[in-house]
Each structure stands twice: as structure tokens, then as C-alpha cells.
Length: 341
Image (cartoon, rainbow, N blue to C red):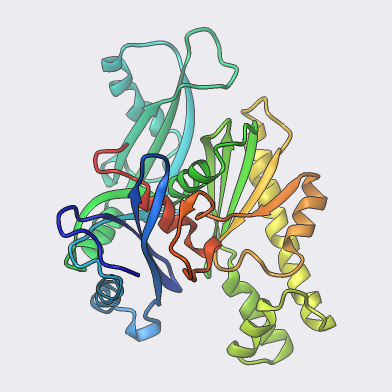
């Protein structure tokens, strides 16, 4: 989709998922953003999924998009990443730097020497005690960080940003839905092997949780219970409206499981938040449009449920063909800038 400028290598959002690698490059405009390039490639699978093969696949994808000189932003996710909102008494920046590791020990199930800690004091819209600090704590295992940085470097491009997938989702949402002023938004990103639930309070990340339930669980259940092949199961899930009663039963059971996990996430968060009502649920990910899921979430949570368009406010060339909701993480990463926190 067009070559990039030879003078300013773009920052490319590279979403290295379990099923596909997706890349997005954006150019800032006077107002908003325009799309330089976007594309995806199947992730190597099984015995072929070596680090070398993954890096080669990513490099080939970037080459095909004309992004030979790009810089790369990628993300880590999963249970090796912990995000926690802390409410701390007023203190100086120096005191806070010393206090954060002490507070972190309560929430991190790994030795602190094995994790990279970061934190940010938020301009909170939450009701807090007078002068209290609203602190967002992020911890990620050092081995996972090193693994992802090595994969980024192996593409032959410079790794300049390493983010958290939930933050990338929030970034994509904020860039495209800044006209909303909801108190509590639930972002649900459904990938092949897992899902992310990210709660936004007044536009800021308040809580995230990774689930071991994704589109792959639907495929596995259809193959097992209906005796169909993987391609046939994929075709069933792509149908706008399922008519096969047996397939509907399988899908509804998994929708209920996902709904239960979303409820657990909300219940856990509500124990420390004054905001109880969900204003909006936004779905993204390659498996987010399976028939019946939007209706179930809307009914159970009594709120609007939309499918995310991460390119909603991004100018795209005519004829651009990308599966929008699946690119939410890649778009969020592409919106980052070197040096961002």
C-alpha cells in the first residue's frame, strides 16, 4: 500500500499473536492520523514456530508492506504481566520511588528481581482521599521482555517501544472514540488462544485481566463435539448467523463461559471502585464477531456492546482491506511514540 518516506522511518505497531502477525504503520496529520500500511501473515505453527521462523515471517510481512527501514513497537501480555491501580498517601517523588517496590510485593507472585517494574501517577477522576496518589503499577517478567525484544530485533528493525497489550487496546480506543465520556468502559479483545479484559475508568486503564479462553476454544469445541474439520469449524464461526442447532449449542456454552469471566473481572474491580455501572462494552480481536456474543453481553450487562473499529478516525486509502477489529492491538502500538511511558 505505498512506500514510506525514505527520510522518516515510521514506527510500526507489530502485534505478534499466537495465530497471526499483524503490522500497522501510521503517519500523523495536522488533525489525526493516516494509514501508511497494514497487513497480516499467519504465525508459524507447531514445530515450525521457532523464534527464527517467527522473526522471518514478521520481516517478510514488513518487507511486503514497504517498511524495510521501520522502527518497531510491540507488546507483551499474558500472566507474566500484572497491572494494578494503587492508592497511596501523599509523598514526594523520591519517597514514591522507594515505596512502589514495597507495595508491589503484595501483588506480584514472582520475586521482584525477576520483574521489571514501572509506574505512573495518574490524574485521577476517581474519588480518592484528600491528596492521595492514584498510581498505576505495571510489572512484567524480565525473561518475557527479553524474549520479545529479541524477536523484535531479529526482524532487522530497531525495537523502540515495548508496551503492554491492554494499554495498546486502550490507546486504540481513545484515539478513535475520544468523543465518548463514559465512566466505565469494558474492552474485550478475543484472540485465538486467549482474551484480554481491560477496564477503563474515565478513559484511563483501571484494571486488566488475561483469560485462557479465546477463539481457539470455540474451534476445538466444534471439532470435538461436531466431528468437523478445522476449516469447517472456521467457516461456521465466520457465519453472520448460525443456523446449525448443534453448533449453536456449542457456541452458546462458550459464550456463557466468557461472560462469566467478564463478570468475575468486573466483580473483582468493583471491590475497590465506586463505579458500578458499565456504560459500554467494546469487542475486538479476530474472534470477536462470533454469532450471539454481542447479544449475550448486552443482555447480561444491560449496556451497549459495539465492535471496535480501530481505523474509525484514521484516514485510509481507497480500497484498503483489513479486518479492523483484529488490528486493534497493532493500531494502538502504531500510535505510540518513542519515549512514551
